[in-house]
Image (cartoon, rainbow, N blue to C red; front, side, top):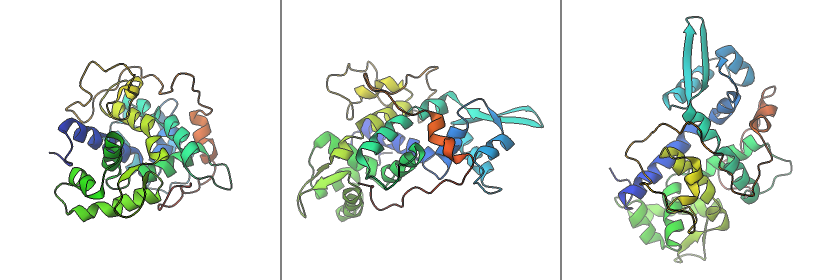
Length: 281
């Protein structure tokens, strides 16, 4: 069932990216996924890596990540159970460097260097605003759109004035620009800079190799080779490719590894991500 007035393929694409973000945005999910970046671990070993979680908090998190298909619980014997990434979960972690790169360029600077994990958590706060993905999709594909027209596309069954609270939030977050009341809306440089992130999330959620992100019909590059198959699958979760290429553009390198994301968190309670209400720039 459609959730926007966009074509069904686009509507499904947005819904699946929103679902992918919802899997990792809940508090501590990314940190737990990163704690399991190596070989599968027993529950007690994971608890030692995420020691700030109180008793009773870790098990529901592990269960939800298993239910989402990102982690796998393996019972070797009744007293020997381990948790590790599924291929699908391991592929999703490859999107994280793109989020860090975007955050370092577009979120406001703080008075102290932020670990990459906090950059990710701050970014996810912005990307999971209500209706954010749909609004950003429309503005990317249509360049400038009035509030009323945007409402007809993004929330066709709702009163059109309901578009303004999420729009104002995205303007405050620095992802959307406008010249004033009554003027059309457009992506800011930060919003447009999300192309690699949304392209990779879309490829992952459709079960495609992450290298196909550049070919996304909205967030890709015009000169990228066309993908030979439909971008959106009818299934919400498809098996990930056995080997998924790292989503790094030609000539680009990443200066951090998973251990850099997480190394500070194993021995001390991490600082919370910045509160909602705007980017750091």
